[in-house]
Image 1 (cartoon, helix red, strand yellow):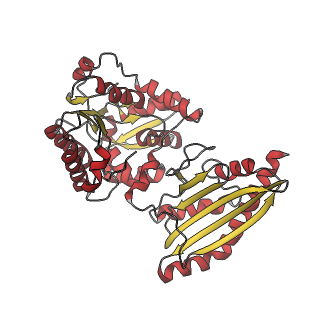
Image 2 (image 1 turned 30 degrees about the vertical axis):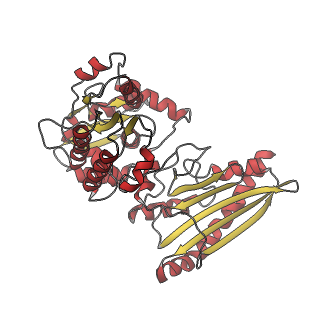
Image 3 (image 1 turned 90 degrees about the vertical axis):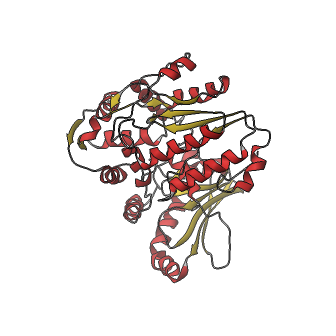
Length: 425
């Protein structure tokens, strides 16, 4: 395996050695106001080292033909032009992608499940063309078996966003009323979505802007090149996504990509770092104790003082952080890089270790870690909170809140021990 950074051309050559075909699944939607510059630079850097690659497959977005596209869709289209203009490539242009863990699906799900009555912008009556994630993957794989084909639109049903909500509600057995009004600009609507759902504003804006105009696919080329692929209906895509979530088969989640913005500071004990350690003997084997702290967060919550965790999450959202809204992908497993509420999994070593890095707004960097090891007839559980303060404000923050943290962290480690012992009784 080789690792390269598209914004560091010197790192790409080793990563591209011996590559016959490449998938370009990169965009800088969450990188800030200069995301178009990053997208352009990344695409040009890739082109400079990929001229020997026989085929490049790129997943872009559908662009409205009669109106000016959003900045994000324009950037996706520009990347496609850069790749197609210099390399043998196939660009798939897709609308909203529906699947368990996708941002579009999560936005639709949370809005529909939480709001029995929706006062919506009038543009929810515009047609869009969603497509199931399984069909997108089928096209990506099939592209390797045909010559580079240029731009190819893909999509399934033509639906309004209003109808998408109605179909989702029907599949969930819900009754929903949607009232379109000629109000709510896209960015205002995105902020509202960012508050009502786990989707942050940085992701909600491009999703909302993608449906403010009718964005439809001309699928004739896809049907000619890939006749074996018959995209499933939107209703079937929703049904499949819900089934995967119910069966805990979601493999990736939209929030897993958020740490790539360079804000994920790797853990390293250093001078000035504050450590708060709590340890208990637990009358349960390490595997059971590990399961208890591995499954914290999400729908299960944090065992004790749940109202305090909710208040902290609400404060974090007000300050611009993720709060508790992201939940977790799977209640029984985790892998490095994925999110659990306002934490990011930094290390997991079954059945001994879990370390989470805090992504809530704090004046410094914070981690919480659990370790367990065999001891006599049970286990030794060690819970450690680490805090690397930033300036005087960081120290004041830690010591001002320490009485609260002491109570909450103390009750948390005891709760983990109690749950593990109860599981063995």
